Image (cartoon, rainbow, N blue to C red; front, side, top):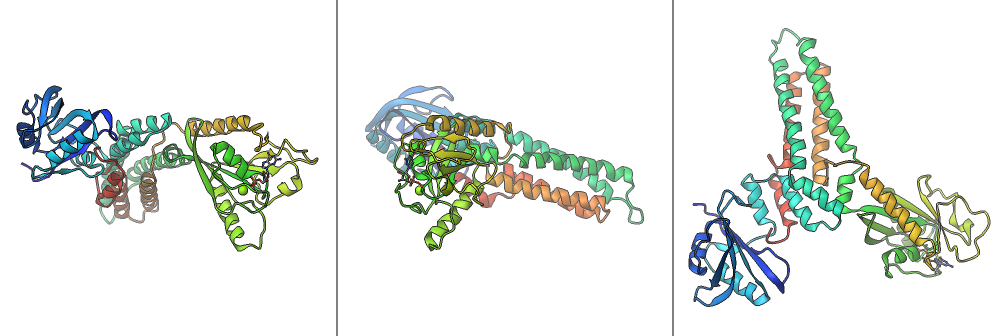
Length: 444
Ligand SMILES: Nc1nc2c(ncn2[C@@H]2O[C@H](COP(=O)(O)OP(=O)(O)O)[C@@H](O)[C@H]2O)c(=O)[nH]1
Ligand SMILES: [Mg+2]
């Protein structure tokens, strides 16, 4: 018998609801079921209708109970799910009854999944997939999370680690060569070839322009341009609310204002920024620096120009880049002559041209999201480990090529295996587990 607490949580959403699910995992289930369910411990994996009582025999509710004995359960432990009416009084009565049993307590966020991970039922990327699918808002997020939770990333990392184990065996052959002789070319050449192939594969995964992370966390569009061009007016129109202050006074917006939307089937963060100009005002100057930072990180920069006064639109502006989408605003007013080439002409105030602009933005984002098929990296955590792994592999190859020491190469390959192993959670992840699982909701 394990010493572990049995955990208990409401796994379904906020009450009131038609039905709630209360979930338990751990070996106290036998005792609880015997004492509190009229049916006793239900037959495994069979929904059983039963009355559910507290320790005094008072009826809590009538509902279904499903028993899933370990190790063939989500957590690997015995688990019990109770399907009751989803009212606050039922839930409170049920949970307080269950947790008043010694050795039974409320679960922490993600604790069921953490137990599944610790029991070796899933690896860390699959656990992250579980967290992501619960949070998924767009279809693209859902598809990515599903791929991850069904082992899509595991497969890739296992393949890389298997390749590396093979390479390590070959490097050790080189290491074992007698001191007085250098390892012959025939021994090192195939190892270098295999290493090079793996280096390319990992470089390719890293060269995904962050699409997997963006599908998960959102793409970024920055609205930039001269003061008074109408940037804040456009942001408000795209947001459908007054998120940013609009005035006729140039230099009104100082901080970056962000609005979250779904566009082109993706989460998109739209940022309104301070007008780009040289300024003596300290606060405005900080606003301009922030605007430049946001623009530099954006997937798309909308460069807005006041069409009624293009000379103020500073088209020759040092801030403008050739890849910017140029939007001429104030098309309702008399447009000045000498307008530059532009991609869109709108009136942010009246809304003319805005639907076409929105369609173009949606198209841009959905194309960008589709530009990488099945990204291997969906979190910064994966990227950091892959970058570290890659540099070890490059160091190993250098050592073999320059004949400076096969022992060093072997050590680097071992380190690379550890870095890739950390992504799936097979080694050295104690320090990240808390961070990964605390992001979960309770009951999962
Ligand atoms: N005529 C006209 N005025 C506009 C339009 N969009 C914004 N404005 C006005 O231009 C001024 C500056 O707008 P704002 O959105 O604050 O510009 P920002 O400094 O670029 O954020 C305000 O007085 C707005 O009412 C438009 O499409 N047509
Ligand atoms: Mg503004």
